[in-house]
Length: 234
Ligand code: DC
Image (cartoon, rainbow, N blue to C red; front, side, top):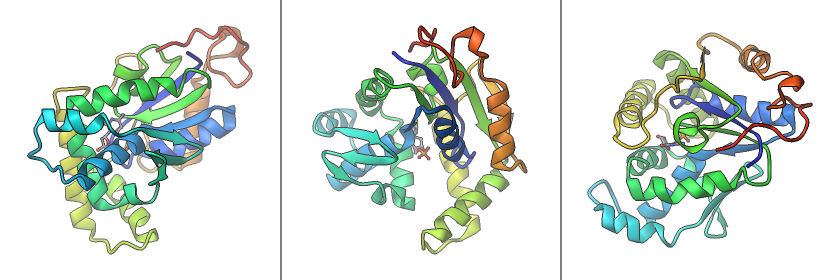
C-alpha cells in the first residue's frame, strides 16, 4: 500500500476539484470513488434494476461488472462511461445503489487496489473511515447546502442540462440524507480527519489549508518530497 491522502464530504463540497489539484501538485494519482459508484449504478440501471431490487439481485448483477478509474476517466467493462455517469439520473441511482452492501463490498477491493502501486489522493464518502482508515492524512470537506446547490447548478448548466435551482437543492438534501443515513459506511467525519468548511472560500484557499496540514518531510508521510517507507496503509 502506498501513500494515501483521504478526503470525504457531501456532494458539491468541492472534493473532486480539490483532490484533483492536490494530486497534481503532489505528483499523486487522483481517485474519484463517486465515479466508481456511479458507473456500477449505471450498469445496474441498464440491467433494469431500480430501488426495489433485492440484495440478491444486486449481488448477482455486480459479479459481472468491473470498473476502474484511470487518468480522470471511468471505465466500465472496457467502455468509457465518464460522460454518461454525470446525468441527474445517474446521480440519483448512484446514491440509491451505493447504500447496498453488495455494491460496497464489490468496490472495496477495487478502491484499495488503486493504492497498491501508486500514491493517491482519494475522495468520496468513506475514504477516511472504511476504505483507507490508515491514510496518512484525512480531511472532511463541507460547505453550506446553498453554496453546494449553486456550484451544482452551475456545473450542470455548463454541461447543457436544463437546471432548476430549487429542484437541485432538494436533490442535494435528499442525497445528503441518504448518504449520511444509510446503515453501511455512512458519510461522517472521521475522528482524526481535519474539518474544512469551504463556504465562500476560493479553491486556492482550500488547497492552501490542506497543504498546510500535510506532514513535513521529516514525518516521512504524504508530503511531496517525502522519502520512501511512508507510514501509510489501508
Ligand atoms: O461523489 P459523487 O457525487 O460522484 O458520488 C455519487 C454517489 O456515490 C453519492 O451519492 C454517494 C456514493 N458514494 C459513496 O457512497 N461512497 C463513496 N466513497 C463515494 C460515493
